[in-house]
Image (tube, rainbow, N blue to C red; front, side, top):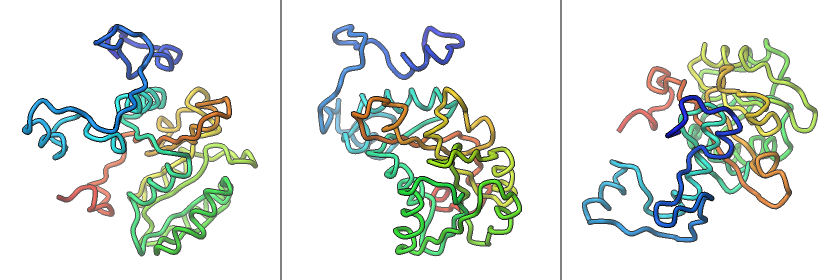
Length: 243
């Protein structure tokens, strides 16, 4: 963050990802109510659409206001980037849909928010993605449940509503031994209490509806990438590593 050598948590929570508005000097982040954006030239537009440079082309994909939120949460979690979603369930769905495909397998904690359990147990199975649920504290069960087609381990940092605590360092070690990432739902722990990526998780998400909003007025979600998982070395994710 420009102007800060080592910003503390409170500073990141207030300012990460944002700069005063260059047109007006406004300190607060503007709400950009626009669907599309103006390009300087056709060449610039082409480079944006080809993902050759960073920028905004359509607000369904990215938006300056949303980008501040994404950069701020990534900074608070110690991640390299984030993507906002319409809800916490959308964040989980996006993560699974991006990493998995028909014939893939997930090992997940059985101590999950009901909506997450149903998404994995019912919805994803309709698309050929199977899930084995294990008790979060049964380390042997995590290891035993892994199959050749397993591509993801998943749990909640603190289970909702049972408050089971996931042993992130141990479960992440099991995941990495088998060349797969660990995704955690960090909603209840928040980055203020626990930075899951520093303990070994590779990806995390939040239901921003809960503590990130805090007032019962917003539905939202966000996925954060820790930048630690070697997708190419794993060999299980050619859709991410091959062109």
